[in-house]
Length: 607
Image (cartoon, rainbow, N blue to C red; front, side):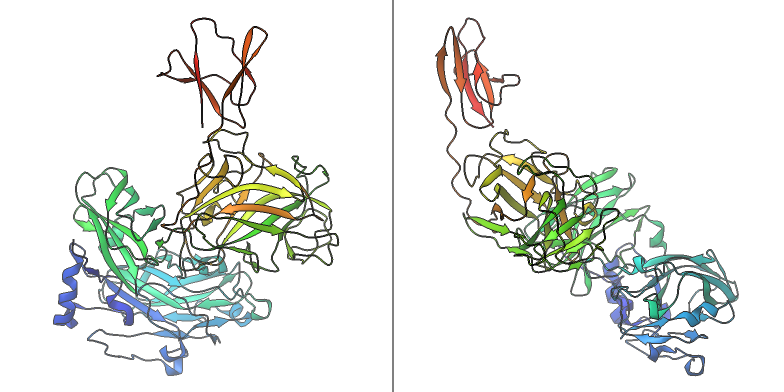
């Protein structure tokens, strides 16, 4: 299958408009790769100092770049300043930064604020309006509301917006999302409207880390925007040969998969027959670690847009290294290993000194893959919380607690419950998937998690599934998602817990709160070490030998036969040695007394 480069999101990288009169033979050749998608008009208005930040410097600047007109026009009528907080998004022109505004902007009114005059191509046409910015510095207003108005030449579908608040500038997979603001409709006699931007409400003050940031605006005139965008779901590695796509229209005639790599989209798969409503499997080839996947669909002969999709599923690798911290909740309970009280307890990360957003930071314990080897990781606060063996940082404060969230080394309670194992992305070139086995968790000499008394396949044993906690479910790819007891790997005995998950991006804020809520909450003594065994095999690595199956024995007790076996297993019976075997209801733990009458029965253990 040929892999043509999809140019719709790439051609205008250094432009604000593309007109048919300026297409050279080079561009015409590139357009052949767009199949049914017509060439879009993408008009970018940037706000960097070289692109007209004050009226005195502004004019119709024309920079010819491979026959593509570049006309950034931006009027600043209220004082702003330069910031290097540049955003990154597919198709966006390269810029050195953006403009920020402080409390002086609160005086901005429709005629005394900021004016955009995008050089659009089509009179009377409707354009979609977007903006992109970065709030990574943590100093953008959380509640700013901007007003938009027609100065001349257009009608606007929107009058104000909150899309300049800090939450909309958060990067995903290292890229910032284009924020849709609304529509602008040119008057029949003009293609160069003037749009005013001004203050409506909220806090704008650089001194209190509440800046307003303006980076790049985008005006789009393209019929591809009428076709809904389907979604790629799940996690993938370079050897995968298909991906799953959802939200597909029942009338779609084609589903295409594209990979974003090296600043360009390349088609890596297509399905053009047997398309179902909603979910479809699409064959692919040529996946590359670090590439981002996105999908389009063709409806009524029109392919949907691919430009500006900043957050595709990232192609990962199996079992990259990962970092671990312990999430501990202070408790009034004191019986180690028992389920403890979780009422109103502060929650801390043990093993780290900082956080990345809500995620535990460094140092943590970095888990590395290793062939056939069970490894041990240990955490310990020690006897004196003010001088701990391992550091801690509070991430959730109980009502009335005198220490603030973020306080270091303040686990003052001598007992806690294990709230969760906190797995954090460490290799930021891969989202996984991860396949980790956990066994034999101890506090001092007290072992309380061995999984031996559960049957293989059991869930909610000690831990919930990775996506159970709403705190971190938004960090996950959706599949795989499992925390299951298995009988083919064990540190000791025959059972362990197998965890499977993948992140949905590579940001350092991605973590999993593998919680014990409602199925464990084991109490630990903070003076003693907390020890966990794990198995983490690299891609293509060797698993250890499968544990020896348990032995089923029978003893005569009075008139009955009593069956015994170690650990938790399903006991099955059959009328003949060859079967068929069925589970004996409720028989998972020994001893079990045979109450069957003649004819004789045959028994075995499974799971």
